[in-house]
Image 1: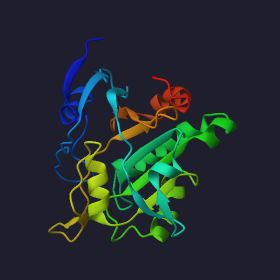
Image 2: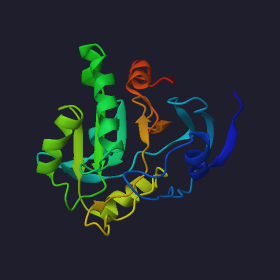
Image 3: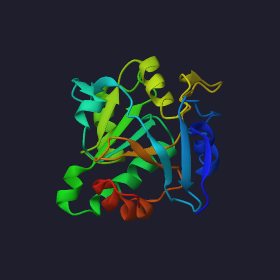
Image 4: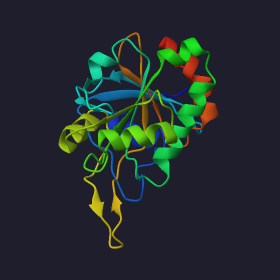
Length: 220
């Protein structure tokens, strides 16, 4: 398969054909300093391989129990899927969480226990620990980890992965919209690097096929 050497931003937009309009608004991917050699992502739902892998964001946020959660430390050497979104999202966020939940349940129990799915809110003012704690089990799975905190901290962490996030804004009809990238990034349990990227066209079946290898840190 032909490979392209692009900026990580271009990788997110071109190679994976990602949707940069999430939950009702225009968005553009952030521009991290790293350069990625990108392959894959040529068919809907397939992974885009990032080489070199992204470094896991240095984020210390608050989980659904009100406790501090150090993303790097808590997910070290564990297969981890990371997503940025918000609980009031009308479409992409609940669909993504549902797809991941369905795929996780298809795994043997031992593999389910290894996988960590982390949802970081892009609307921390409304997404309190209690709100995340109610929404995640309904939209996804009780095992999913929900994190909230300072918006600028979250925005900066997402930017290191090429994921753009805009501050929530009120529309003319009074609704509040949080615009964010719709990517899921898989981090390897071997290297802790973010080596696979999935767009919002990825189905539960796509994830179900990929998860056994992701849990081992392999390329699907």
